[in-house]
Length: 282
Image (cartoon, rainbow, N blue to C red):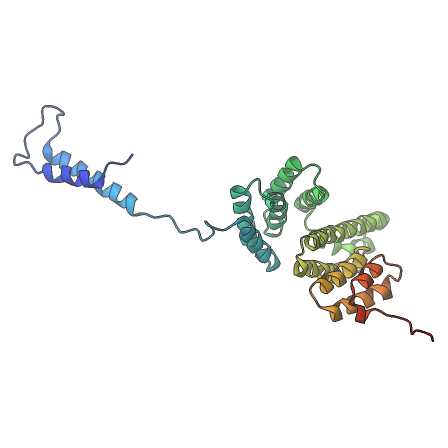
């Protein structure tokens, strides 16, 4: 333990002896030198005592509060901030109900924040700790995607180089296979977004569900996941008390996927006044 600052000040006062040239036979140190050393030590310790750590505004946050703030940051594309909140959530509440989700979403946050090494580490930790989790496939996918980007560059760059086949005969022969791979990756990425949307819907986070579905419809509208996005979006709107928006999504769903399984679910959730009915015959 550090000495009491008050005792150090008493030592400084006692050290003012009248004979500064006298050498203490016990330790061979001149009183003046002892005084100098004591003052330096006292000043150093006093300076250390005055340094305070920056206040952590999240110190008293609950697990739910940390998770909500992390989710909000993800929606606002503040991925570094989100990763920080998720780190604290995992560290403070390692056995709470949000722990597994924090591990998984931290991998995504690191990936979007441009930290591939941390993203892979977070995904591997999730896989190791939760090998039978319903979303472990997303962890494998994210790990593979980040590794792929490290080795080959971003997927967008790969897609942007399609015109190589117009100049290179070898690329022309490989183009069909490459195109199939790109289609597969597109479908996989869209499916992963739908899995997250389903997770949000199950947790009654309907705004987050709608946002994920919109992202799929904006970026992966040509994939099979578009049906799921329209269906989940319509159901989420109904849960939020927005039947008009739900009907719009259901109308687009019926137009593009007339045999969709979501149509019956949406129909069952509609208010009675909104359900189609046949006129009674007298």
